[in-house]
Image 1 (spheres, rainbow, N blue to C red):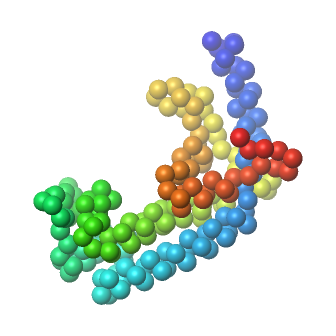
Image 2: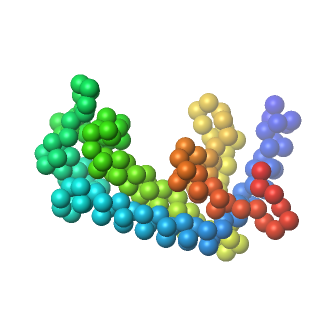
Length: 182
């Protein structure tokens, strides 16, 4: 196993790390500008529905707006969970229960998705690009408890695919001229 599988794979992994993956910096810059502009629009729309400005990223302030000022409650008898401290939860799973009750909830969920994509990928990945225009992640042959292959610094295996706005990030990884990304 070691001689015929693990050892030959080590050379491939080293080559993958040394080669890195090419990043389309202008694409990430443009996508970042678009998503930051969308976040600003969402922020304004959320504040309009709330009747005032507040810190959307503050669970406490968001809870006050949703539950105390707008008096939102889930339809059809669903119950909202509370945090361990006893506050009403504003986690995504709990907000999903309120999605049909008020338009502010959908705006908040969209806002959270975009801000997460910006902070985790769009604004961060370009900072990891080396002088050669590539990100050089680390790859581990048995990087998980189940022995699967993994990636870190950054983890390139968790680039979003579930939503259209998340999928856009994948277009920022490109092939070098006369090469194909597979």
